[in-house]
Image (tube, rainbow, N blue to C red; front, side, top):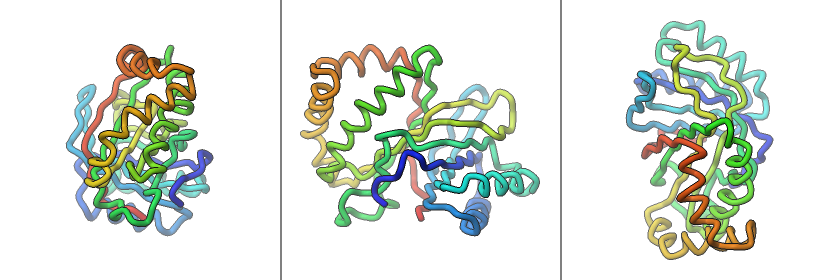
Length: 235
């Protein structure tokens, strides 16, 4: 399952300073329902709007009803709920769906160099930015992924926030996770800009659009909190 269907939904459980036993308990509960894949991404503590968090536990599933019921049980258990900052229902972005390495020769996903991005899109630019993800960003990265220059590039769009610990807790609308092996990072350096320029030509007819999108449009369209992430669990 290297590429995952864009119809796949994910329950994103956002944790703050949760210890290993809490995370393992959540994963054990999730294994009892229909979960297709899990991504437990830990990173340095993020501070925004006076609120902090350090983990996104993404449970990918085709049976969201079961996971929503499970999340309600977590909220009712104080030993878990005190660590849960927010719970989101998300959906895999179209064409931003590269979950696992293209080839089996790459090192395990848990040893990738990975980054997680929490994206806050300005409402008036959301439609344009999302379409750029589908037509430009995803296919550009797939050019690298197809040639084993990248191991992971997957995006999730917020569909519904079903819980948050405080009304002021930050509300991102997209999460991106990108991963490279150390060797892929070296190999991707000379191929990175050519891949994006080629996709700009294919999508817009002019590779100069890549610079305009990167340097002018995206800084206006969105704010990004990007952090190096450690994949605590994959399955």
